[in-house]
Image 1 (cartoon, helix red, strand yellow):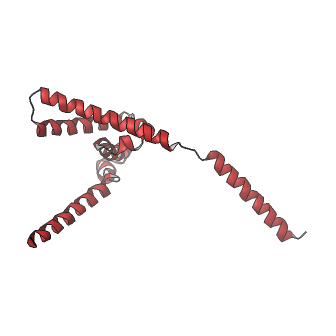
Image 2 (image 1 turned 60 degrees about the vertical axis):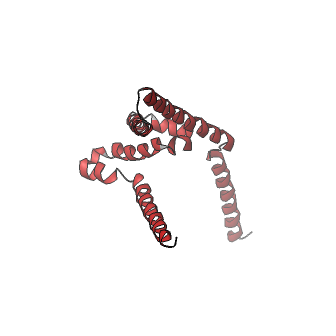
Image 3 (image 1 turned 135 degrees about the horizontal axis):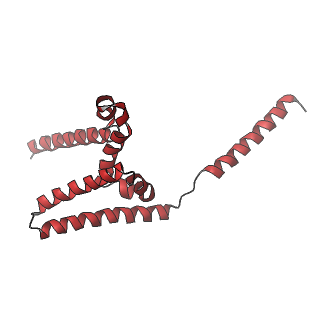
Length: 158
C-alpha cells in the first residue's frame, strides 16, 4: 500500500465522520409545526390588535384614530417586550408570526439600540439603530417612489 492511498482513505474516513457529526448537531424542524406556531403567534398579535381597535371604537374614536392608536400600542408593547428580553423568546418560538407584523419591525429597531447602547449615544445607538430596519425603510421608500413614477407616467397615456 502506498502512502498516497493511505492518506486518501484517511481523508475519506474523516469526511464521513465529519458528515456524521454535522447530521448529529444540525437541528431538524418540522415545517408543519413551525407553520402552526407562526400562525398562532401572528394570530395572537392580530387578536390583540383587534381588541385595541374594538376598544377604541367603544371609546368613540373614529376608525383612523383607533387604527393609529392600535399601531402605536403594538409598537410600544413590542419595544417594551424587547427591552425586557421577552420578545426574542416569542420570536424564536413563533418565527415569522412574530416578526412579520408591525411588532417585528419595532423589535428590529429597538434590539440594535439596546445592544449597542454601551458604545454611546452617537456611535452606539445613533449608528446602529437602523442596522436591520434601514434596508427595509430604504427599499420601501424607493419602491413607493418608483411605483408613484410609473403611476404618474401612465396617467399621461389615459
